[in-house]
Image (cartoon, rainbow, N blue to C red; front, side, top):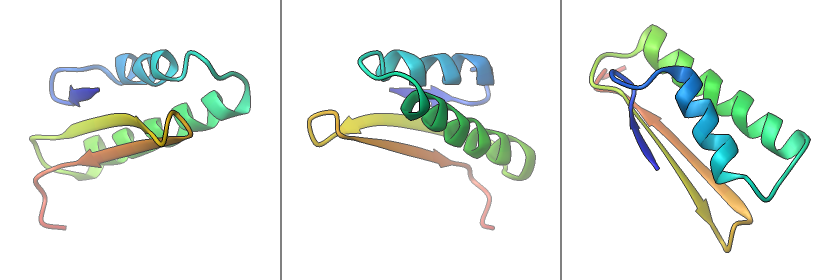
Amino acid sequence: MAYDLEATPSRDVRSGVRDLLVHYSGLTVDDAVLVTDELVSNANRHGDAPRACRLELRDEGKRLLIEVDDSSSH
């Protein structure tokens, strides 16, 4: 899943995490949503456009990759 953070509200990214982790519950999902939200918030607050977020399940659903980037050199 990939999100253009210039066009996608944070709530939709959080919802995407929940959708991706539909087979999990409790703290696993809550922690993933919290980490993703923090990374997205930091990119929006401190980074430069364009900003993007990518979510991917790996290792047969055992690992969640969360990538957030922006065009800032910092």
